[in-house]
Image (cartoon, rainbow, N blue to C red; front, side):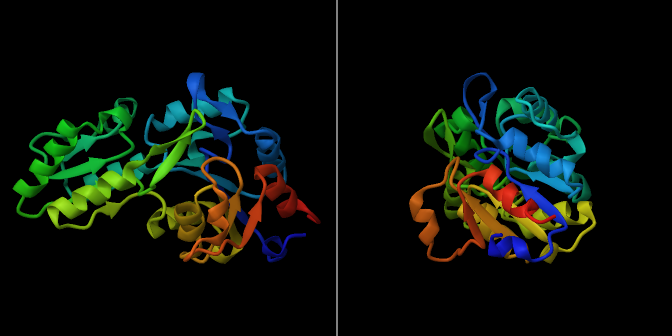
Length: 266
C-alpha cells in the first residue's frame, strides 16, 4: 500500500478534466480505467466529491457529459466555481460584468448584471479577445473600489492533446494593469476545498485529493491539510514531479492506480 494511503481515509476529492476525462470534440473521451475506478470508489462507501475549475459550461451540462461518458455521479456531488460565485455575489450585493464562456452564462441567470460594480472572469476561451479584456480593464479602473473575481487561477489546461491558456494568465494581466489582487473562487482557494470537505462531513486530514495540476489541485489541497496525489494524465508534465514548492504526497500513473491504492486492504 502506498504511504499516502496508509493513514485513515474517510473522503476523496477528484479533479475532473485530466483525471476523469480528456476534453475534446463531441464531449471528449474518458481516460482509460477512470470510469471503472469511479465505480469501485463509489461501491466502497467512501464519500466522493468532484472538484473542478471547469467554467466552459454549466454544472448541469458538465454532469450530463460525464454521465454520457459512463461516469456514475449526481449533480450534488460536483463542485464547480460558478454556484459558489453566485452565492458570493448575492451575499455581497454585487452586480457582475461577466467575461466567461458563453456556455456558462446560464449558471449566472439569477445574477443582477445591470450597472456592474465588479468583474467575474472564467475560462472564456475565444472570448478572451483584446476588446473584451480591454473592456474589463476599463470598467475596473473606472470603479472607486474595483473588485475582480477569477474562477480559478490555472495557468493552462489540455484540450485536443494541446496545452491551452487558462484563466490565470488573464487574471494576472488584469491584476498588474489595475493594481489590484483578484479574489479566486475555485481551486486553489481554501474556501473551495473546505466547502467540499464539509459537505462530506469529514475532517481535512482524513481526505485525499487526486488531480493533474500540481499547484492548484495538489498544492491547494495540501495547504488545507488534505493529502494531495498527482496523476500522470491530463496536463501533467514530468517536471511537475520536481516542483520547487509543491511536493505531492503521492504520484500515480492514473486514477485507476490511485483508487487501487486507496482501497487496498479495505
